Picture 1 (cartoon, rainbow, N blue to C red):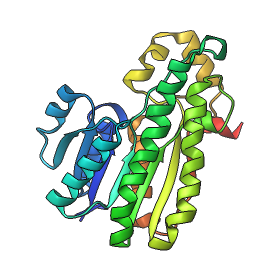
Picture 2 (cartoon, rainbow, N blue to C red):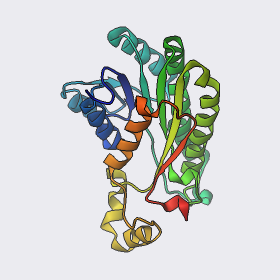
Picture 3 (cartoon, rainbow, N blue to C red):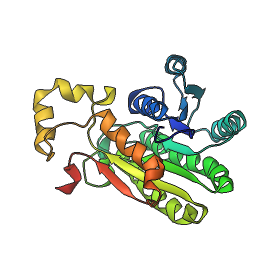
Length: 244
């Protein structure tokens, strides 16, 4: 029996990158997975996998959230797990940042996470159980110079703790993970630059980039009943970077 046997799990950004790896991992652990994503081509591909159901979702659209969650509840009968994984990044420096960049970062990384919790929590509250894992970033723990991205991921950190204290009484657990530099399509440029890669590795006690499955295993633990007494926690998956 899998660690998520018979659970209904929603993963945003679930059709590519870390989200797709999560969808596969959760499926293998017995969950019925709803991969929610804005990329329709990626959704078609991931929906061909047995046990994974693709649904289009713009995380910044409140109506999208309300409609998708209603569909999931009606189709599958429950919503046990929400993984707020969808996100975007920018390396613009603060003096290069305008309102449009700021709004884009906050809408997807911050508002999208908040909307996911807002519309999922009533279902979990009614059921008297649930687990939410929000993906923040190591940049929310240490200064890394990514400015608007850091601010957006910092909002995820703050709202996770606030929501955890409010909804623990309903047996809903809300935790956050803080990945460091992980090998994904988003970081391919780093690996093509040996100098930049060496610099990052030198700043990381484990001396390497993280792997998507290492993030996935941590999220799996927090989403599972094995973490039944953990809420409001901050788990850094960064090779020790934030410990320096």
